[in-house]
Image 1 (spheres, rainbow, N blue to C red):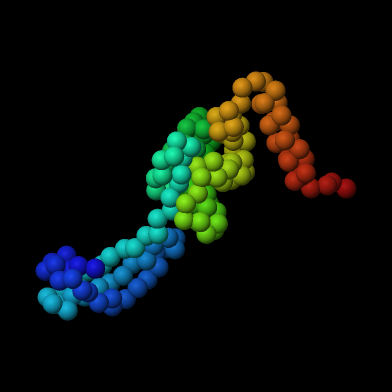
Image 2 (cartoon, one colour; image 1 turned 30 degrees about the horizontal axis):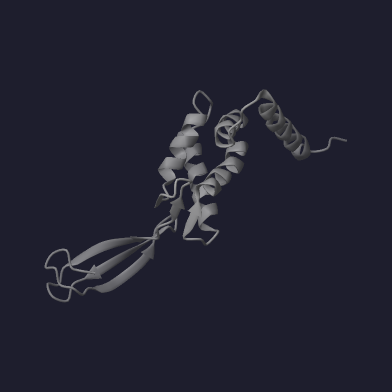
Length: 156
């Protein structure tokens, strides 16, 4: 790490701390040449490989933007979208892979979105899974109903 002030090629780490969400490390450094201190932040890059063969860095903001479109007109708060984005990123990072296919990102979105808002889930799933007929929608709605029935507590 070069000193940003005097460009000395070596610096010393004084303190290291994980950020709030654990996705990065903040390091406090000092330069042995000029004695000045500065802070750096290290992030682990998670890469997404697209169907076209292009690879790009994972973006939580891009996930949230896609889900926001599906939630348009629905009673979903920005805070809920941010939490969904964090859940998706955590589940993808938990795989331990440095590069993941884009379809796995879509699959990671579907579960939390289903729990957040069923209508938004259907909108997102219809685009993600390329629904072409009414039967595709009916089958997905039937799965949602079955899941809801399975989760409903049995009344005595």
